Image (cartoon, rainbow over all chains, first blue to last red; front, top):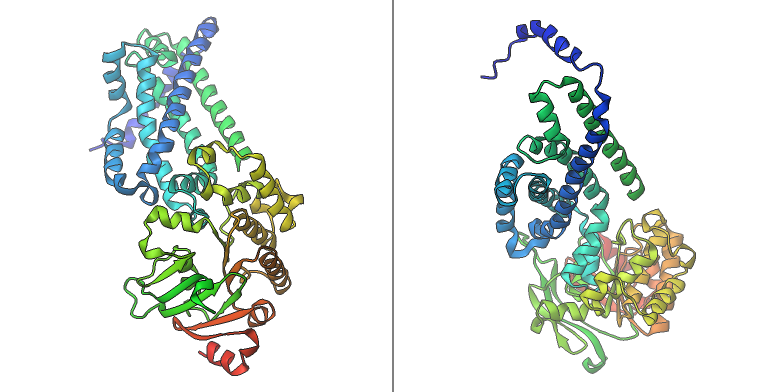
Length: 226
Length: 251
């Protein structure tokens, strides 16, 4: 079914030949590729951050202990949105707002809002019940009780999920570049299609640097929040 | 004691948990008035925690009724019950503080019941509220730790934060669900000294579950003992004899 066949690795030389075409790097494109990288970073950041902002209130409606009567409907809605691949969402929004980073950013927001809502809802369900009971005992209203007794507990894990989704959003924005989403993903696609492998090498290096920097920043922020 | 002086009345209170064969609280009738310092004794499973939790409605009675300040719990909806709880401070065995928040932030949560949602969400506190919070932190001798995270405090200090949070409610009733069970004897004694002092200063009704009979005898003005969900003793501490203690804790 998967056509798994170790013997096919006998063609390993092909890959070495292919990668040898990447050198030397075409550094003349660096300034314009840096600009495209920033677009990708912006799409990923705005997409995941706006997704987080939407997910925070929605997660309260998707957690068994805080949702009330909305639980089932919200969970089904989130599963539905999550099941749509980002690239399909990108194509859908492209038809509304036209090609470019905006359509890609909306697709990332929608997908991340649904993923983060589910992840945060599960953190809410697993939060220590003690502080929640204490808030009930002081006579706090349910919303205030939930906000103040649950979110301080789960905040480091929320950030952990967020930074992971931010990293995923960078890769997603690259994929969305293939369908006209802009950024370095689109440049990578064009450079590949036109056999500009020395420029592809620059694109790949920049993408790797972005992912590593975001991962490093994420771990620093989590350390400070713990 | 006449019922007219009563602040809190439990009439024929029963709790039977789902799928349980017997009552956790079995037709308990008790009347409490302001100024009493009541310790609830009984071995594990006697119904002490269930009883305390029914007093502020954290646990609903399956039969019977509770009247607080002349208002019957049976007539109250969820919002009505919430309003009643505002004046009933509660401290817990495991403190139930909000981790990662500071002493000050935890004590502020004691005010949440009496303020609007918007003011709570925005974290807006007026001068009198700030003074009240600072005063109660001072009363529990935690001023030097005001901005320390509660998860960095000792067990005794955390319990003091729990007490300060309850005091911030300006309560009429102080409830304690085994507040010293996880503390060493010296710290437990100091916590009881503090509770007794605050009780007298504020003329509260204090009702506390406790395992340690000596602590109950030293600090309580009245002892209520439960066995298998029933009240088997209700009198002044001097009346609690060795025979009654043996009967309470026999296996």
